[in-house]
Image (cartoon, rainbow, N blue to C red):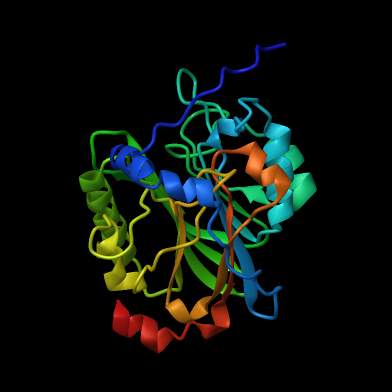
Amino acid sequence: MSPTPRPIRTALPIELHGALRKLGGALLRGPARGAAPIAPRCEGSLIVASYNIHKCVGVDNRFDPGRIAAVIAELDADVLALQEVDRRFGHRTGLLNTAALERRTGLTLLHVSDTPGGHGWHGNALLVRQGRLIRLRRLHLPGAEARGALLAELQLPAGKLRVVAAHLGLLRRHRAMQAEALLEAIRQGSPMPTLLMGDLNEWRPGIPSSLVGLETFFGPLGSGQPSFPSRLPFLALDRILCHPREMLAGVEAHHSPLARLASDHLPLRARIDLSAAQLPALAAAA
């Protein structure tokens, strides 16, 4: 039997340490109020989700892939972006039992890793319930850290969808560069409904945000849904962004008791309506 991996603590963005000191009072007041539950699926719509699984180490410092799988089952997503799915050091194999996960949830892992037994690309993985992969790009993102993103064009029962899955860096200037690299990769493709999901490591709205450049394509980002830390979330580090915006029918942080324990991030969940994505508008925005 292989030894249980030692817990790995995720570093926080450098600017966040000062924010934590300033917002200590917010922790005492309790978690931010979440959004109303999203509506169920309807014809032409699907549930999408993003989840930083913290290498399957929970806030109790227990390594428990089964617990992460149970949270994924709770999400009931059609398309799921995961972050931190592989071992960080040494042979970067995946940490989940993907065969068991597929039996339990119907989600199939897209083959994106260049490591035998790996799940992701720089820790990013994509799982899809039904559909066909049209095109896949593995992106290297700029910055001092080794960061990457996935760009997948999918043919789903509800229509075509481009999904970008990313985990951005800890430094503000690098996140801004990475956001621009993601936009450039999107613009190189044909007009298509586009979804950006992941741990973007940014909590500030408006001009101070390193993600402000994304607004040229996705529109105003707003303050987002608090997803970190999972037991008392008040920072919106995780995002689900859509283009065109009209197809986004609600975003919520998944606050189940198990989700608050299984990782230091809460999952984000959203419903999108592909029938609201009009191709003439997409072409004009491209």
